[in-house]
Structures are given as structure tokens and as C-alpha cells.
Amino acid sequence: MQRLSTAPIRDPRFRARIVALSLLASMAQASNSQERPPVKYDAKVIAEMSDRMNRMKAGGYDVGFGFGQELAALPSPVGYQILRDNWNKGASLFQREQMFKGFVFSAHPDALLVINLGMRDPHLSMQAWSMSYLSQYAYVDFSRNFDAYRSWFEKYKMFDLAGAAPHSLADRLSAVSEAGDTTLTSAVSEFFDGIPGGPIQQLSGTPLEPAIRAMAKPDELYRRLEPKISGDPLCARMAVYLVAAGTFPAKIASARCVALLKQPEVLASHDLIGVVNSLHFPEVNDYLLEKLSGADKLNPGALDAMVSAVLDSEDPKVIPALIALLPKAEPSAARVISRGLERSLGIQVPSNAGPDFWKSWQEKNKSRFTQSGSMDGTPTFTVEKLSHLDYIPDADDVKDIPSKSFLLGGDENKRYLISGPMNDGSPKKLCIVMPGGEGSIEFHPFVKRILKFGLGEGWIVAQPIAPVWSHDSNRVVWPSVAVADPAAKFTTETFIDEMLDEVAAKYNVSEIYMLGWSSSGPAIYSYAGHGKHPIAGAFVAMSIFNDAFFAGGASLSVKRFYILHSPQDFIKMSNPEAAQAALTKLGIPVKLDTYQGGHGWHGPVYAEIKDGMKFLTAKG
View 1: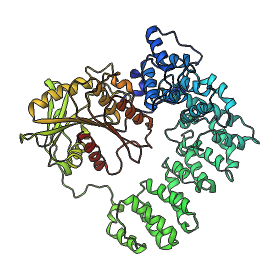
View 2: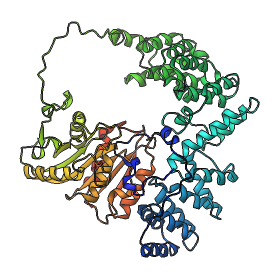
View 3: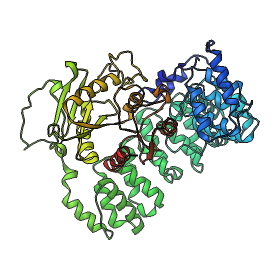
View 4: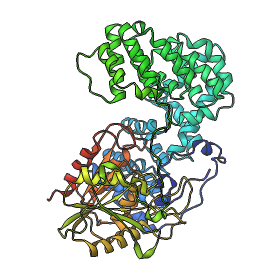
């Protein structure tokens, strides 16, 4: 298999439409024995960088990390070759550890080769350093069996980090499938022992999911596991994963989910109950409700997991059924059920609330559970059809904020909206809000809420609408200089520059800021390196990062950055951490904050935006 593109900024993993890699497709690729053609590169540059590396004996982490980023920005495999040829010629152990990050944090196509340098280093601490990074991507823990590493690397050395994981997991699953009946239990145990941190808590989105779907005979393995589930939590976990990965027809999967929930090993596991119920089979929900009728006999962990699972199902009969259980349940079980109802319904419950409170609440809110969906008795409306360019979505809570739509030069692909007090003549700060996802006009009510609740008085907001250059689900939503799209007729930088030229001529703008998330993050980073207008500050949330987005610029048009990311996001924390390090190296003030909840806006959204904008608007 040939490696990915030698230009990191063209790597499809950095497409702005952040989508999960198709790991099954990766498994179907050609043999990985093909070697790459030679790459020509300036010998003087190689010699100069080699000399710099060999003189790195002191300094802070930023010295080696910055140099590693420089190496990673070179055409593949030039940077890796410099690192390889000078690995033990002078650079200190500490600085080599930092160089290492420049490749790993940017998901470089040669990162696995760089990790191999550390794995083969005579220093045991460097080996441990390398293992800690490798385990996060390959789902293999070689600290338990270092002798197995050499053959593993020989097999997967032509893959990148992300590509190696599902192949490695698929091979290990094959070993489980091929184990004899007497050794199956130990084979399952060995499989999970090899996963750093223990068994995977969530199946969806991990390399294990497509690896299971790629198995030749999952049904055969499930049948062999069935008699071993009782009494063996790991066999139970493997069986749950086989079903949850979507390897069986719905009818069979539903029956197996119910059968699995009857096993104490599954019922005692909070995360396994969640995995089973994530398939949303009605039969599963009915079984859990039946089981909850004996709530006083369940341990608190299983009870809480079951309550959460049935509430997540959005079945309208769940809430009345849980309220009916409260008078019969033991006090501890009643508290668990009450807390679950409170979380799900989003209501404040008195500390002394008991069954009578919930019975009264249900009586006052029973229409929520008896609605037929009929529109009888509601007035009818006539809606006049509008041109799509006249359409601006709105919401009741932000109708007081005026909005106008504009086209740059009459080009329908260059549409933007201005929201806020546009014509009062007072100086205003301008925030360019570039939505994530599809970047469509449908985000407009949320953009106005950002203005109303996150920015406040003295601001106006400009919302560019992402042109739809194709209907490919993997398209680049915000094509830029750094992340291009051949179908795009212009870059986001061109769009933003022309929009700012026009807006500055119309309104009394004192300062300009940018705010974006997910798919628009790379375009904001790219604008910092390629845009012509000075930007006082940029707020980037839940986004990928590659320092090549800046094109190696020594000076950026954006003067401050605020980065917000969730440790639970499928986009790894190494992305915002690398952004913070790269910006700090360039002398740009930057702050990285985290929030809980995974990809998307969670928690006190507008308070989080206020905090970020407070940092960006601070002087000095």
C-alpha cells in the first residue's frame, strides 16, 4: 500500500467536513509491500537541518517540538529521513522526545516510522515514551510483550497510525476466532489485555467497530461465546460488541440483546447496558422496563445504567412507567429513579421530593404523554414561496435582532448575512461567525444567539454562507489555501477578504474578530496565514489542526487565539495542543480551554463564548 500524500495540507484527513475515516475501505486496499519512489530534495537543506538537530543538547520542550514540526512540514519522507539519519548523533534524549511530537501530533503519514525510531532506541525511557504514543493509536500494549513489536512493525510499517489500528485489531480478532473451545476464554482475555487501559468502554467510533464488521464468521464466534458468557465478563463484553457492531440481521440482533441483558455480567456493567440499548430495539426497552419493576433487587450501578438507558430511548411510555415504580421501590432505588427523571426532563426537583411529587407532576403534564400528533383545531396557514436567496431562518428568542442578506458582486455563491444594530453610526466590533457542519444558512438563529447572549452590545455579526460546490458528504465545506477543493471557484480567504472590504465601507467597524467550530476551524487557521485583513482575535472550537495550515508563516494576520476543545471529542486533544504550541512559537497569545461532553456545543455555551471573547478582546 502506498503511503498518503507527501503534502500534509492535502491529506484527506484534514478535510474540513470532519468525517470518520472509512476503515473498512482501508482494509480492502492493496498489499502494503509496495515501497515508495525516491523523493528529490535540496541536499543543503538536509545538511543544515541535520547539523541543527545534532547541536540540540539543551533548551526547553519548545526547541525540540518546534524542530519536529519543521521536519514534519517537509515533503514526506524527507523529515523522517533527517530524523532517522541523525537519531543518535548528538541531540539529547529530551529534545528527541519533543521532536517526536511534531510528527505524532500532526497525524503525519510517517508518524509510525518515527515512533519506530523511539521503540528501537537503546534508552529504555525512550522506548516507554514511544510505547505510550503507539498504544493510543494502534490499540496494542507492547509493554506486556516487547518481543512481539518487531514482527508487528514489519507487518504494518507501510501504514499510517490511523490505518494500522483496524488492521492490527482485525488480525487479533482472527486469533480469537481461531482459538479452540478450550482456549477461547484465554484468547478473549489476551485480546482485551492488549488494549491499553483495559477493555474499550464505547464501541462506536473506535477502530474495533469496523474490525468486527470485517470478520469472516462473527456468528460462529458468537455461538461459541454464548456458553461462556455466564461467569466471564470479558466473554460477555466480546459478545455484546459482536452484536452492537451491526454484524447480524435486526431480528437476530434484537433477540440476542435481550438474551445478553439477562446475563449478570452484562446487567452489572453500566457501559455494556448503554452499548446494548444504543441499538434502540423496542424489545430491549420492554425488557429493561420489566426488569426495573424489581428495582429494589438491583445493585445501584445496574439500576442507574438501566434508568439512563430507558430514558435515552425516547419511548413515551418510559416516564409514566418509572413514576409508577417509585411508590414500590426501596428508598435508595427511588432516589436513583428520581435523579434519572430529573436529568432527563430538565426540571428542578425539591430535595424532599417523593412519589407524591412525581404523581402530581405527571397529572399536570400528562398531555406530554398522550399527544396523538393530530393537528385538529390548529389554524391553517398559507406560505408564499420565496427565492432561496430571500430565505433567512429565524427564531422567536432572537427576532428582535435585525438581519440583512447581501451578495458580493451579485455572485450567489458569495452570500453573507449581517446581524445587529447596523445603522446607528456608532463604532462596533465585528465578529465573523463561520458555522461548522455544512456551514449553511440554517445556523442563523444560533449565530444571532451568539450575538445576543455571547457578545452583547457594541457588536455586529457577519455570517458567510458556505457555498455548496458539490453534494459529496466528504466535501470540504470551507475550502481554503491550506485545505483545497478542486470543485471550488474561490477560496474562503478570497470570500472573507471581499466581504470585509464591503462591510468596512458600510459600517463603522473598530475591530474584527472570527469565531468558528468543527468544519470551519481549518479555514480560520488558514486565513491567519493567508488573509489580508488584520484580525484582532479568533475563537476556534472542536477542530482539527495542522501547522501546515499556516504555510509556515512567521507572522499571522490574527493577533490572538482562543481554542476550546472537549477531551471526549473524537478529534483528539493532540490537535488543539499542537495548535497552542505552534501559535506560542510564533509569538501569538493563545489560550486553550476544555469542556465536557464530546464533539459539539455542550453545557453553558454562551458563557463559554463570553469567556473566550473576553480573552480575545483583552489588551496587552
